[in-house]
Image 1 (cartoon, rainbow over the protein chains, first blue to last red):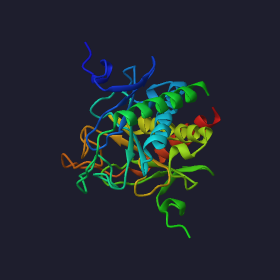
Image 2: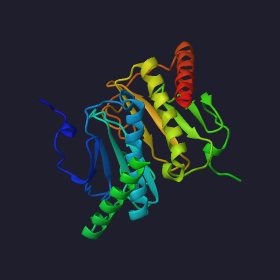
Image 3: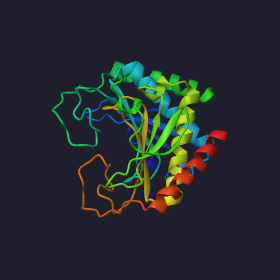
Length: 142
Length: 142
């Protein structure tokens, strides 16, 4: 029996998936367009993957970055793969704004201001899903 | 005139470099084997790079991860490219231990314990440099 949340079907909003990985929208209250790229396989470190699968993972991560830049126009993108609590490779892809709760610090640091953030509208969420799918599929064909 | 610290010659301990990027050892007091991969060019986001340069960057990052795993045997590797304060692509490659100051949280979060950490010995620093060079050069030949 698995005790790894990422080995289970996702409770999140899945924007795109194939047999290798899924792209989910976390609906984070402070970061409404915060996405995660989660591998299907229970792999702890990127270097536990063969080089071709590392490259495939990053093509998806960068496609999500590109889709977020096109759709949300953040001031900065933050990318991270930590996995200290959930040692199953997943990449955080976080659009950051100068007005957000932690900027310019990591969103894992203490807040530096209050922020009022609106949830993504249905239209924007659907647009993001379309652009993520286009960008990921283009990146994987390349 | 540049006001970007990463556009300047590095004040850090350079473990490896070429015209594209450098690998530095930060000599962080809490994370003595904390490395950073810093691009030579002043590029803000990974998706501002052409795909071949993104792939080159990640081959170096994963080579450093592999070298740290071989040399230091951490409990987990953390990878991150934030750049909110210094929008010039650089990757944090952080060997984490269950006993470290922030584990299992991000090292950007509040400390969860005191930790006593020894600086890297000269022998271990030199071994890390050798293995980083071997791993990076092998990855870039591939």
